[in-house]
Length: 452
Image (cartoon, rainbow, N blue to C red):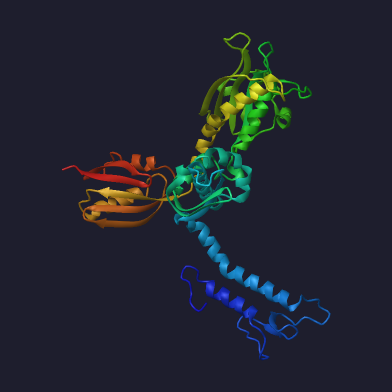
């Protein structure tokens, strides 16, 4: 308590405040280094403001001791909890996994327990990277896209304890994770996006529930007509589960323009974007989904073709086509089961395309290194630095080094490394030109080529 942590200059002051609260009154004098503290002789502690009156109801002495001790421990450890959450991903993690087995020496049980331990380590990392409520909301996505392959995020591991007892095989590992890969995949899934950053999507898909049925589309029906749109409803649920914000047709029905050009079941890109814009969406999903008779006798197939486009500029974000056999379902009609299965097949690729431009915008800054080869003089490095400061996505140059004809820059970059590489490819600096290559996940190598 006597030293001062350079990383947390307020730690000593905070500790002193806590100790002042905990000083037991014994000599009749109460320390007063932190304002007007007065002794409370009724319970032997120094408290702020006035001594409680006899009518004041106070907790018993042991309760006060416990409460103040908990408060003291919380205050002195809280700064380190935050620091640990920010830094522990770069340190080895310890996690355990358990698998049941009829034979305790079973190799399969050991492998399953090891996989569970590595999965538990990845789950620890998710707890540091994402808010708890987001993990709960999007756990199906995390389970299917991240946690099914924990080894993809393991840099190395070591088994530090193992035992088999009572039909259970337990493995404890110490592992270092490939955190950049984990962050990259979470970013692609849109899980770093706040709710306000998630794109609003309107589904404008015509569908028919049987080969003999007519096309149906919700934006072309009277608002009083009650219809089920199995494909659109299933697709909207899947989009919401993956982090998009699908707009509810029941709410939008009153906003549909009266112009008959918007009443067609199959909208082209221009009309679809115009209608989506009036409905308040940022992305429109256009296309069709239907059931039809397949080549085999009596066989029914579900097929569909979708495209997602940005409303503001009409850019196509994704195109998806799919066809599958419809299997009978006991708990729902064949048409509903088939269209729901088709939506499930098409949704992942559609969502990935829709999220791509939004996740790129929200990508957090990261530290990268720009290595410069062929440096002839310190002046060359200064020219590179001045140009680098204006390069796309560069927020700050944290350091510059020159040693043995090679230079390097530490750069805080918000954006894509490809943009940085393109900026230096073939650039003319007057007395020399440069070439650039992406030589590592966080490394760009720039080569100086003299003109003479």
